[in-house]
Structures are given as C-alpha cells and as structure tokens.
Amino acid sequence: MIKSKITGDAFFWGIFMFLTMFGLLAFIYKGIVQFSLRISDILILLFLLFLFYMGIVFLRHIKHITIEGTTLKYYSALRPFGKTLDLDDYRGKVILQETGAQGNYDVIYLIDQKNTTSFKIMGLHYKNFKEINNAIELKKLRFDPSFSLYYKLLFFEKININEKQKD
Image 1: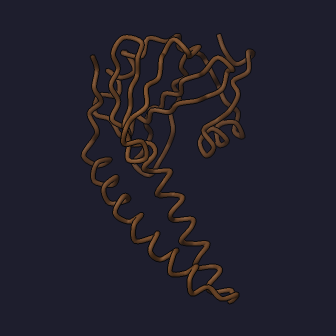
Image 2 (image 1 turned 180 degrees about the vertical axis):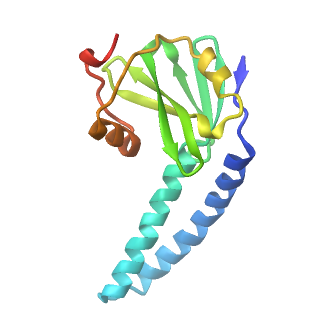
C-alpha cells in the first residue's frame, strides 16, 4: 500500500487557501446583498469570484492518495469523505511536464476508456511522486500535445487523446 506524502508547501498553501475561501465567500455575499449597478461594484464582484474560482482549482489538486493494488482512493478538502477509483477502468496514463511559479514538475493524467483525461496528480504537491507513479500500474501512453492542446489540458484538464498520439 502506497500513501502520498504531501509537501510542506502544498500543506501550507492549502490551509491558507481554505481559510481565504471563507473570507472571499463573506465578501461575495456582502457584495451581492449591497449590489448596485455601478461598474466598480461589478468589477470588484467579478474579481472576487475569479479569486474564489482560483482557490477552488488550487484546493482541488491537493489530495491525500492511497494506492492498494488496482484501487486508488483519495481525499481532499473538496471531497472530505473520499472517492475510490478502480485503475482497471483506465486505459493508461500520460506523464507530462508542466511549468508553474515554482518551476517544472511532472503530472500524471489517467486516461479513461473513452480516451479522455479524467484524473490528475500533480508532482508539485507530493514528496513521493515517483513512488506514486510506480504504484499506478497502467500502460504509459505517449502523448506529444500541440501548443493549443497543452494549454487546453492545463486549464480545462479534460481533453480527448487521439489514437494517432498514442503508442
């Protein structure tokens, strides 16, 4: 059985973002209650909604992962009761390198039976990423994304992997 070891950085920023989310919700609520049709109110509300969305996206990627055989179970701030994935339901995995503020890091995308990326594990958040990668016993698919596919995958995390792009 393999358990993920979350880095101190991810733990710190996860707690910071989780607490910040409550403050943003309070400001958004206050903005909606006292809303007027002034441009400044609209821009402030849109900015706060954008920050809230970015916080949700960040928190979604910090997961406590347990892999046992062909079962992957994960917990996160957004899924406190966890979710279980059967790795036999996936065709393979794609390992890409992404770039962020802290440099380059590897990312695993699990590919489902419909050739769609359906689960993402970011190496940035785990001390034992290589161990997690080795525990996921799926065929490694070769995928060389174009510029537009790379950014679509980076921002939307759901793309279809064509047969031409796999081994």
